[in-house]
Image (cartoon, rainbow, N blue to C red; front, top):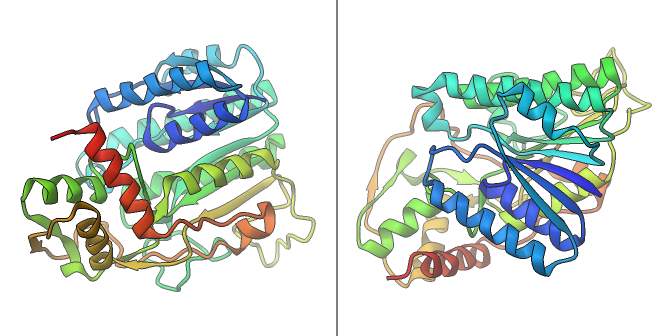
Length: 339
């Protein structure tokens, strides 16, 4: 298939594009390659995608442009796509507290441009990234797509929830099939430098202390990035359809009478943050020096994904154990940052 992957220079976008190329698809990547974090890491990912295309069955082309540039987005859609996988976004909870407009521009305006381009072209299926952060103040575990998620605790989550609502409007008005994927704490090789695993590994190897928030009482449904990429591919392959049993008197938030759906993608096995740190210690062979801090603004104490809907729909659930995934990350980190 011919597939557009936005955010292809990013963490999840890179892994997804690589898998699609290796599968034999024609992949068009789209990314502005901004400096939210080290652009050289993004350029290295893009370089690897180019190398993959030379050895794999698939094809690769890259467009360096901003999603907020409507003309650039429309130009990318000059030739039709069989699928659009929208993974570009301004990420990060902390950054949203100080730079809120970045999130409105990238996550709302940029997503509108993608929706409009898909509508105009008649794209068969749009799959896009959401986040477990949309559950916000919810405390009923495990988090289910069939429960209301309308109490976000920071703007990042609010913009991703708005994406789900915008997508439903387009699915209803224009019969554009859309699938939202709520990712749960993604980690693994080529990860973002602002994420906990990267920060902890860097500090532990350097013999520096790590800041552990909420006094280490967090639990997270840590999900290995290659499991995420597999889930994205499977969800994208299967076009969203209307739910014939959807009842407007008892509306299910995860489905619709329109071709719209929402899935969680998580490991379905929450891990204590302190156990996560122990896995890093084992992989690095070094002990962490910990500075405990209170809960940060916008954080939630726990996450736990109900993935039964994903399993039923596409026959897949993430399964990589945390210790195995952390080991793979540390091996990559030591290779990418030798010495």
